[in-house]
Image (cartoon, rainbow, N blue to C red; front, side, top):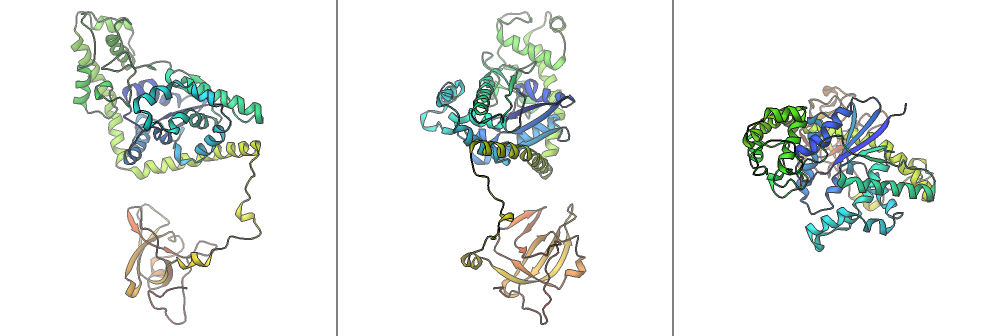
Length: 450
């Protein structure tokens, strides 16, 4: 049986809420155990750029979302996790689809009209208008079958289907037509301060939502201020929107029936319901927050997961993009390695290289990296520097100390495994070994190589 491909994503804007967790992420975690599904989860940072944002905040929130995926239980051994912008095919396919999507379709999009009202005409970007085409590219690149979304995103999945169908009709079958599916429960967790709208991670008021990283006292305060009504009984009644929302959340967290919940709170007040609900929420979020704190202290580990995820995603995305380009008539580029004439570096470019002879003073192993050495180099009057070089598997430290090497010096300083490195050994042979100078007469440290 062919596995169903399922794709879900969160934009790194605002704070991931309890509604996002119970309506989506918790169910992604459960679905990982389904042997008939293949899951793709990513952070849509390009989508977050469609509204006004701060670059530093975007960077931090992107990592925050990725870490919350992992903290909530998304397992990189069972699902693929990556960042949208780490796979350039998303942006490239978007342009191709733009050129094949009728303008009238975009004019029908409800979310653009709603979001553009919030930011004003001067801040409405073309990207916000084009959001649905980028979302279509996200889905179509991976031959996705199912896209679990709330009602507010269903129209976007339908547009992706229309774009796929039109493209297939014009150029031949390339894309799978995706289907939108609603999460089975908790899809519409409403705002605590206004139960007529969904709980939103981008809400202006913090009392709208419970953030997954909220502290216990903040959770208690937010629930205590949640909107209810002036009646006394605690019953599941959809006409009493505030109470109904709280009871729905309670039911999802406990798994109890409506009757069990109503019996528990018979003759009791809203304060007791809110206090009980707050403590259950705190208990739910504590292990997630603990795991998040551990990941936040080990961001290199998180970045490695995202790197592997992007590499896996790129294999699929690039293959799809290659087929698309062939269908629409773009010339396939010849690999440089297959050309008869090799690229030539201009004289002007050579003049920009600052290569000096350095004498190796000391060599130390880099913790946690079996191929890296930390090498201190003396350049005579030019001073000293430290570089990180991937030659540990070829040399013992004693074989390197005192030797001279050509070093490309005018590189930006980079931190590798916690060590600052400025410069690199200029050349290696086909086996990956550094070219060590063995002059008949020792070269002067700091000598220029021209």
